Length: 119
Image (cartoon, rainbow, N blue to C red; front, side):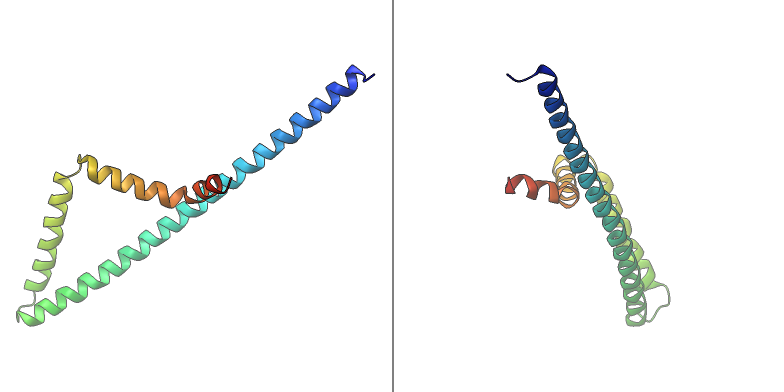
């Protein structure tokens, strides 16, 4: 016959092992989320730099085409102002919010989705 203490010890070791496995899985998912978030911030910063230099280039180009030192910058600024107004007016749009949330969710949690599909 099996002793009760052996059964209890076996159950304890199984539970301990399972808890350690869950801790490791949570840690891996957390580190994955953090690394993808850092990557997203770096990509955003680089995108802003590219946008800045393209905007300056466009402003200088338009200034030379219109032969005025400020018209190019004014037109580029006006474009961004119109874009800002459109985004401000659409800030409560469910379609825009769902697309942004879906894109961020897919980027940040993509590894977790792939794991679930594999299982």
